[in-house]
Image 1 (spheres, rainbow, N blue to C red):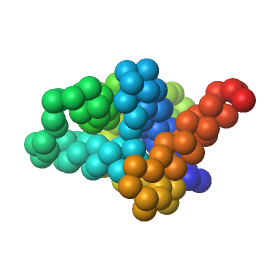
Image 2: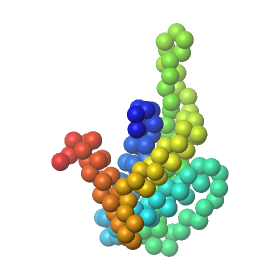
Image 3: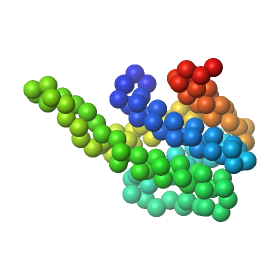
Image 4: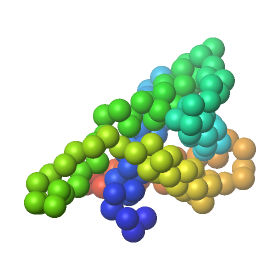
Length: 138
């Protein structure tokens, strides 16, 4: 993404996805691209005020529900910064419409990188590598 502001929002969401994927792996379960895509859609619906089904029957369900809720709650901790006419820094709450655009863009990224093969992890593998590279890991 060329817009640094939205790239930062997307990166924030992608870090949450990676954290959930890592948690799942350490818990002995494996997430799939399809499960993460579904969770992103549920998170978007939460942000829009809907009440999607967020199951908690299994450890995988609890991890994915936690991811959806984390994405839903994240805007509460994100501030947009701009400059006032006099050059002073102004912080204001993140516009929900901007957060929704970032969520939708992450969903498009999943669609771009995933495979149609059931159980695939193409997007998650790509994302883990991308996040590692941005953090200077091999």
